[in-house]
Length: 108
Image 1 (cartoon, rainbow, N blue to C red):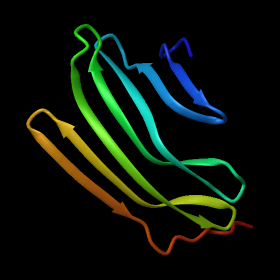
Image 2: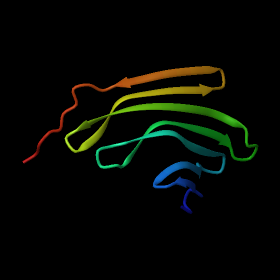
Image 3: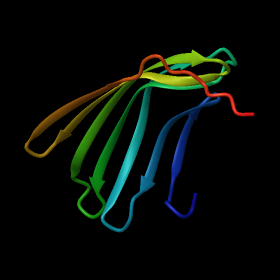
Image 4: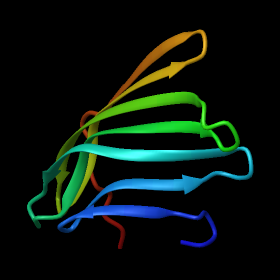
């Protein structure tokens, strides 16, 4: 991926790590820690981190950790719970989104 200078690490059919440029001042790494398989044997990310670095100094600027729980609705996998922990200069923030009663809308 030349537009973002991306590099990928694979394990079988799973993308385990992505290193990418986010402009001249920042780069980031996404590291997949855990996956789960859906009914079609495709992988869904359960836990992963995103670490943001200063491109010039290499200093860590921000770190995000995610934990996802999935639910099957019809033939689709939708997020049930998303938990985010954001470690940044000055502290940490934790956010959680919980989806419930998700339904597909049929269009004619």
